[in-house]
Length: 296
Image 1 (cartoon, rainbow, N blue to C red):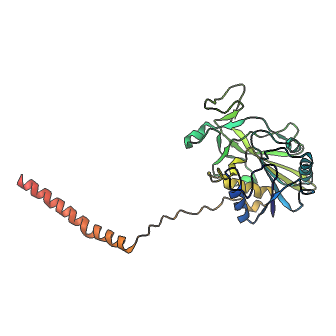
Image 2 (cartoon, rainbow, N blue to C red):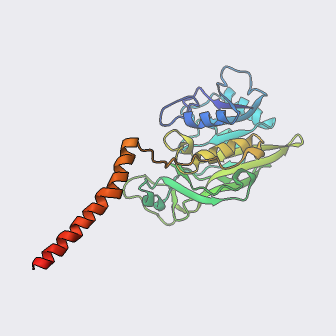
Image 3 (cartoon, rainbow, N blue to C red):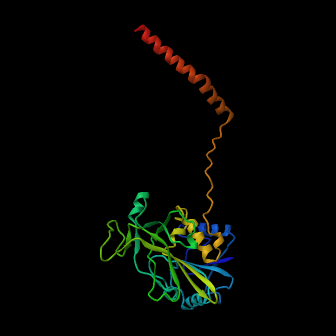
């Protein structure tokens, strides 16, 4: 199975080691039997037919119109997409949002609960998941930094929208500046919980088409991918989008090795200390105390 990562516009790199890149996430996908490769739409005629999933992760400059047309053609013919939408501009991808029936309101999710784990309020915590194959048996907490809200548009274009993750139940969508005095403004900000990940499904040419959308790409970036259940959730999204529901599971966690290995010298010292030195010390202390009291 081939997973392509859109490239050529400053996206998070699948082979990158920078904090904002997706190197660790891509390596985990590779261990699951997925082939990971970049895809520059400016140099190919179309998204290859062997693409199991196309990942779009935070372009920093506008895509060319011809590139957007290739993306739309891929979706039109039933292609699977994992779109990680960062805060800010869409850089030419509004037609894709329209084609998917997505409404992308401005603002960043703020979660006061993040202070309990000594994190910034822009780290939205989630532990509530939809009953859906992509989140089957998933019970780990996930953390979504700088997330934007997701919703279905008034015209969903035939897509079935499922809110996979709701974050920040005591938070809100901050539409003002993110500074030290950020607070909920009734009438302007939107109270939580906030949808930060969604699944889109529809029938096309007699088969199911799947698209997964998250309100941030930071959650599987190298900086944050090790937080709680982020890596597991990201891998599950790719597996579900690719149609491999049998692979959706919690990743096995290696148990911590708590074995204490001591050298022969240390073992001898401990044996002599507890078998001879400690009892002798207690006996001497008791005898000395008895002798002091006798003299008194």
